[in-house]
Image 1: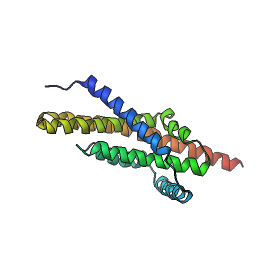
Image 2 (image 1 turned 30 degrees about the horizontal axis):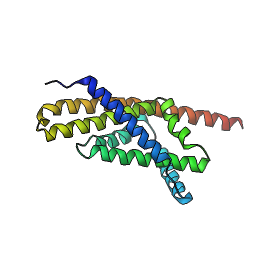
Image 3 (image 1 turned 180 degrees about the horizontal axis):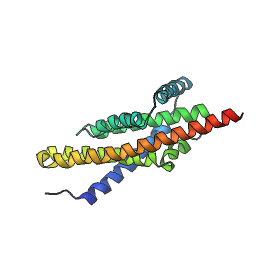
Image 4 (image 1 turned 90 degrees about the horizontal axis):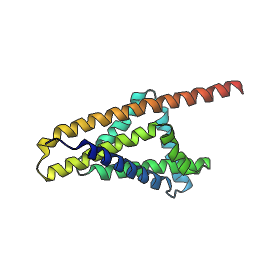
Length: 181
């Protein structure tokens, strides 16, 4: 029996919005100044290693594979996304910015929207595969599960390319300003 792709797409969008809500909750976390500084330093270390869109993809794809694990995926996704929100809280605290503005910016820059659709698809795949395992229909579902992983991996790859080229453009812009000053 073929799956209902329209229902799966709707479920993916619902899960994506729910994950975005978890990100917003994480961005509102109360942090001590030392905790915010520590998170900021971790983020800076990660940013220094970004040398290609593939680095971003491998990082995000690895996390999304954890989100796709049957049964545990939704819990892992919630934890990863909440912790990501805490990084936004730290950036907001250290730059005296509004965390809501920082959380919305990646969505406006498109890569965040694609990432959340990718993550939502992976979590949806986890939920459906978990259900099919419980119903003893995993053998029928496995090919659709693997296709889901492939499809949303491509979405995450597209997001990584967009994010990388935004980072490069901003670095070049800042470098150009520094040369002028």
